[in-house]
Image (cartoon, rainbow, N blue to C red):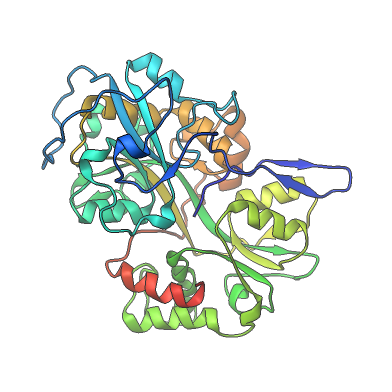
Length: 394
């Protein structure tokens, strides 16, 4: 899914307009693993010096040496900003001034994450990883285990996020949670009296789903509520996976729509072209500020996801990489990315200023925030999920 900032202005007619992509002019969206010379888009004056590939580290670093002067960052759109789109939205420059590590930045599209050869360990230092990407990196030995005692902001992150299977393997930690969200059922109360998770599959369309193979887990939750022997919606047998896929093909097939970009959800409800959608609490907040009668069903359980920062097993610049991990775990940076992306910060201390509204949407710090949320993890048979989903949303 391509990440976009959903900023909304309410005009006199009450319609919504939303911002587009934050990618600055000249920043190339690339396939991770491409050579730095061909694919890097540098966040400051130029790329840092090249370095030989490092040998994958089987155990976490015990200590850090002086910074190497540069760090190669592979990021989802909007997760590492330098002011190229909005001069007020930037934190890369602050990192460079504080650490002396120049950032070489590449933006990647997660829809290309399954290409063979992606994420060569020596081609990057740190990566902002979705659960799908992070799971792949850990499974293939391309992510390095972390020494979290070297990260000052790590303990501020709730244990629930720190111990997710999408960032851990056994006793080892591989990812530092950055932002998270839940998948909720949104409905137009002017057209639908009430709604719940099953409404997405039972109500007459048009209905909108997030275009992502892991959306099959939301169908699995419906099956679980109907009595299926499913403990974890991201861990399904072949038969359960088929049954989940079948839910998308039942009923009003012509009314099934799929979104890549969050702006599509806002536009669809704003124009009245959908009745229900799988989206986030922030979508509902945006639409309510636009005076649209869109509500959150509020039923649990639901699925969710947490994106994290990971260290390459072959990081050429490990000291600067750890400095980046520490920097992005701070409340100041997470406050900025939360306000920019409309996603909940992993560090609750970020819930002030511009992020206060976002934190309220996700109930950050409240007992309900994580209650009955199944956080995404890359299934062991992920290729089967991709194949089933390709039949649903080709």
